[in-house]
Length: 351
Image (tube, rainbow, N blue to C red; front, side, top):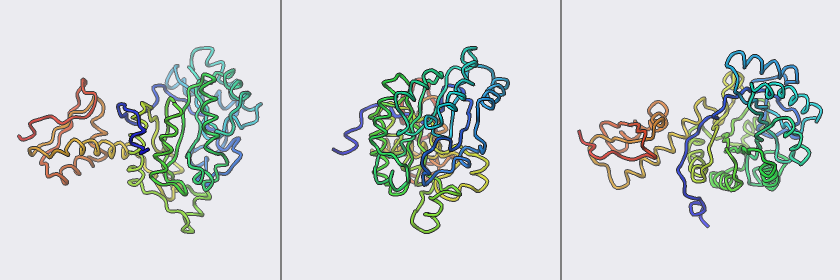
């Protein structure tokens, strides 16, 4: 069955941040049983020294002093449930007093799909964890093998079901442009992940990071990375998939760090506004679909929901310039409307 027919109807949604303020605590590489071809967590996280209980408490205290209570603590960078149980307990115990005082609302952890079992989930529940993120990366077995992931697509399915059954919120992460990946495979991965019913997803186009196996493959000519523009095209496909299922994309693209921006990002889809690029492609496609019946007038006026104008205009007005060049419009206006539920063209374009 064609993929388009498998997608449920729903309102497409944008990349958007969490509705909670997050206090990040980095545990780079802790617990990771494999060296994935693309991974150098010290560059990606911008953190070299992993946290312990004392450091975690200090990080939280400083963050609360700056911004006040109500945040969520998120452990990033490692495979949390693969860390020694005693250290997991130490890290989670450091957060519990802040939860009990009401300063921290919950905890989120990231881990691998093959590091989830009943004992691990029970430990997380005792430690105040409310959401578990799983690095699925791909649901294509060849891509997983060539990326040295060390787990299968079935591991992802089992972990997702276990997390949801245990009452946690589930966030799934995927990547595009890994070794052996194709645009079709990335869409199929998105469909399979959406079918697992996550509460949110993160999409990370692949970046060639210094000190990784992927760097060697790239230098030897065995791997061709995506450009940011190519990744934006692929990711626009994924925004459509997840939007059709009503699943929020809470992050698109690596969070810029001093290490990556300073030279550790050697090639691939590293861009400080990767999410904006993908959203721009996504919305340009929608506008062009509306224009299929032919352009009318010299001025194109587009009605969009409140808060969507920047995404529709595109980074550095890319979409405006593209519409003017491609269709000959003398002027393109994007008008926000609180009552709008989607994009529409406003009649009477000629001035």
